[in-house]
Length: 591
Image (cartoon, rainbow, N blue to C red; front, side):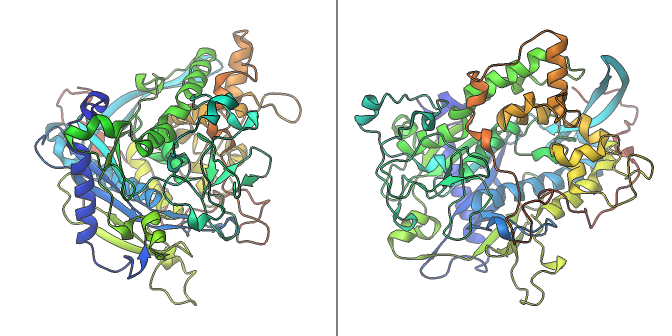
């Protein structure tokens, strides 16, 4: 199947995206790049815009790196990057680029943005927000939102198969049929006790292309993993933690995170309260292993579409969750009566186009570097474009994978707040706090019964953190709760769907999350909850590991999690959405 038939894009696009990202990386300063006998991984995001159909893809975010922190080294204040793999840094850089573009939209004002769409990749829209209380509409008010402009598409390039499921792509053997294994990615093969038959090296350093060092999650309590060392196979479609030889990390593999982005959107939970619809990945271009199929050319598109590493990436980010996600979302919406309109593209999970391109330089591939006896580069680079779809300007930051902080700080000052990366959770949270008032979101902490006068916490913003939200149910962040409801619905059916059926310790439905509304709605409409064989429970991401530290580390195992820190660097302000006021143009923003 040709690229154009699958993704609606010209078949030359994969090569153009790859060339654009590699060229931008080559143009960056040497600081942070691999030295002689070192390797790293590269990922980047590029945009195409129907307003300029003949323009090449414009790179807007880059990331390099292969390191991550152990769970015992996570920063409880959100000042360190726990995951410094290239794909993760590139996506976090893309999120900051989105903040910059939304700031451009706000600065331009609603009227000018509607007259001149090129001021930002986002456009202003307006939506009536209906709050349902006890089955009745408590309030109905217009709210400013934005969405990605029609015609703007996001493309991702990775210089090697992402760690985790996408890296398992060696051919199956005749033993598969004997073992009764199917090609359905949603089947829980671990329950069969029989693995897929792939040759598996005994040590992570000798894996090579086609296998992953990411550690298989067994589903047992406490994030128990199986490194599969000495085994003759690696399971397809399974969730895994990041690879590493040191202390176990709590970071999910890049394949799992990309799968989550495909289902929930690249914008993340915070921006879901201002960006109406998920920012989807239009296409993913993965470099072929050294000596593998190049692909990307029109004459090779059909062959490339079925290359093992391409099929593995498609399985990892879409196919393995398509059926359980669809079944879960269908059940969820069938028992609920939502006051808000549901975007039509949230039910059927759209598959991004996936293609291959030529292998990257050896220093941008772990498999190629290890084959030559090289070592992983200890530094990471993140780059963010200066704004707009022109790709002009841009800034670079270099971080250390071993600390998750900016390079260039002495050991004495290594933990200074000044060493925090612009991509860390605390920095991104501060950006959201500054932006929220422009979209009529009030984040000021109450001094009354619902609040204690303390600083706003990250957990107050990440309302899907149910344990943290218990204390804040009547607090001042209810705007965020209402506006991110659709995001949480999608997340609930993808990650830990059994939480939808969870009851409190006293046997009553919980009241601190969307899980409670699901239980109440099910009982009201006399709908029995799905049984254990319901396909929604076959999602491989059901055992997603929470962001907690280990005993003895900077985050205790009994701590509230990675979202309990106070948000510094921005003070919640009063609502100021004057940019939204139309200048008597008579346009409601939906045209």
